[in-house]
Length: 111
Image (cartoon, rainbow, N blue to C red; front, side):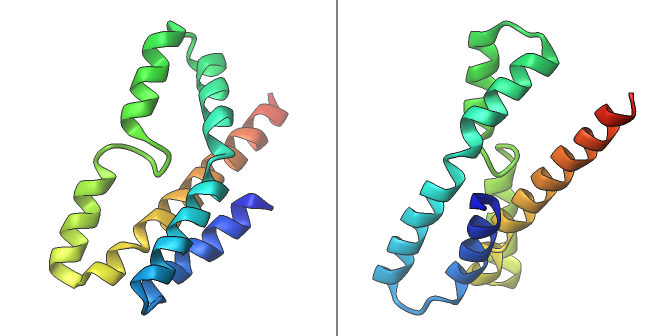
């Protein structure tokens, strides 16, 4: 539920004309994506088998949308195609995250 709500909300943020409404929408989007954080951390610790503290630090550097390079990609899209279009990168990255989790779930059921 939170996953679909977040994607819908993230897709509407670039279309908002008011800065105040955009701030409110970004706040709500942050709340809807917050449920992914503990799940991603515990899943990564379980699957990668690395030392917990260093893995949490690396995950914090990468962030939820995918990786630290995402902000550079958003800036590049903003420079070449407009800032509004660059905001669509976050829902795309979340869709990739969802697809990855679903593929992993299917792969684990087969094994």
